[in-house]
Length: 96
Image 1 (cartoon, helix red, strand yellow):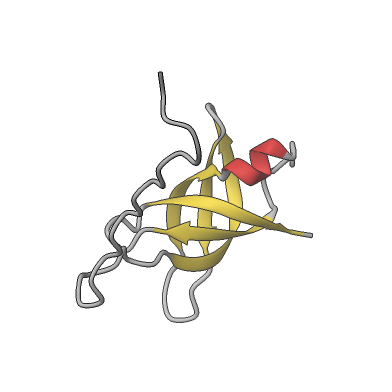
Image 2: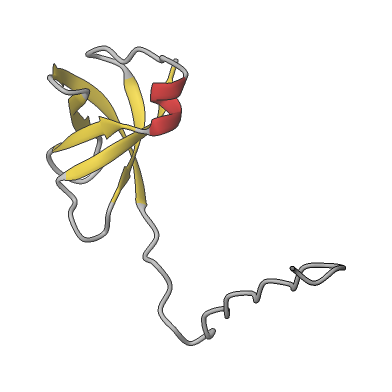
């Protein structure tokens, strides 16, 4: 028979030490969708002030998918790029 009263409290997970490296932050950039590819992928051209444009292969973020937002060629979007691979990204915002 289980003991009566309150159940025991669960132990909290220890927090990381302040000197431990945190996850790298994503790089944000704006670009224009050049081409729509299969499997909800897009080829996006990132605008650069100094030099030629940079092309990135990007997929749609979950929030945009959940809201059924349509992205077409020629749309202006905001991307998040990983600092480790600047050739792939995630579309996080569609500008009107």
